[in-house]
Amino acid sequence: MRLKGLLEPLENSAEFQNIIEGIEKNKYPIGVYGASESGRGYVIDGIFEKFDKSIVIVTQSDMEAKNLYEDLILYTTEVYYFPVKEMVFYSVDAISGDLRWERLKVINEILNKKKKIIVTSIDSFAAKYTPHKLFLDYSMKLKEGSEVNLKELSQKLIKSGYERVEMVEGKGQFALRGGILDVFPTCSTYPYRVELFGDEIESIRTFNTESQRSIERVKKIEVFPAKEIILSEETIKSGSDKLKEEFDKISSKDKDKERVEKLEKILSKNLESLDETSSFETIESYLPYFVREPESLFDYFKDYFFIMDNVQRCKGKLESTYLEFQENFTAFSQRGDIY
Image 1: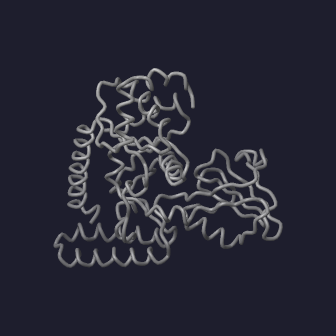
Image 2: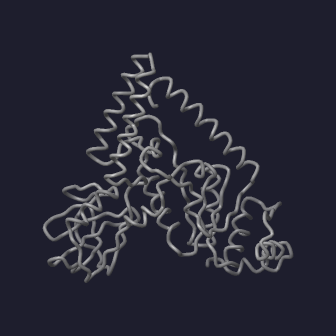
Image 3: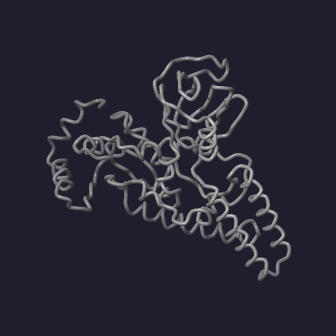
């Protein structure tokens, strides 16, 4: 760890020893008071070093999560910030791809067994997520000497959110040329060029997107899904049918012709996009139509140790988040933007 010597005064303090004893004896909840903002990271890292367990820290806001994350990276490299996933009811020209890549990167870290610290806001627990098993099922590991079926691999990449292009220029893209696969995984800094001899992977190299020249040879890579909602053909059909049934019920009862026509236009656009790309822009708002049992973030944090920064403020923020959601949903529904 970084700055290891700084922990000695903390470890020798009676207050910290009481915290550790409480954790060891499962005397929960354990309240810690009086620590300064900069001291929070100091205490949390001390706890992190004492136990062979990953930690998730829940703050009152996204800004607080970022600040605490920046404090903690002074002590350890095994810390990750998980951005809040906002519920979008309307079509926008561009939803931040950077935040999506960051969330996918951290989801990958959450699901592996490596010891780490995850920092996020209480808002993150208000959202619903794709069952975490699907991320594991659609993750791909490629290594030199292994055999792959390019056709099957290509189909799996598309289903897991990768876009097929002529030339890879950004994350979430892949290209096929003869026996060469170029792919830019969501969790990687560089794209990879996988060269095959027949069905066997002969070499894997990183390459530069601008010059397309190889940089460094590696033995193996992991390709994590490129979208947060993963759907099979079966769930796409089932979800589409449910959306149509819901619209039919609404259109038969709603006397506002203009609103119904607006909803029909939105539905047609979404279903067309779903048929072409297995997704549409605001699909996260319709997750329950496609996933029978969507998960909460708690389902992802199995065997994690939880630390809440200011419980009362977290509770208040969660209540205001739900209230804001209800108000937004009602407003958009009345305008005919959603149903």
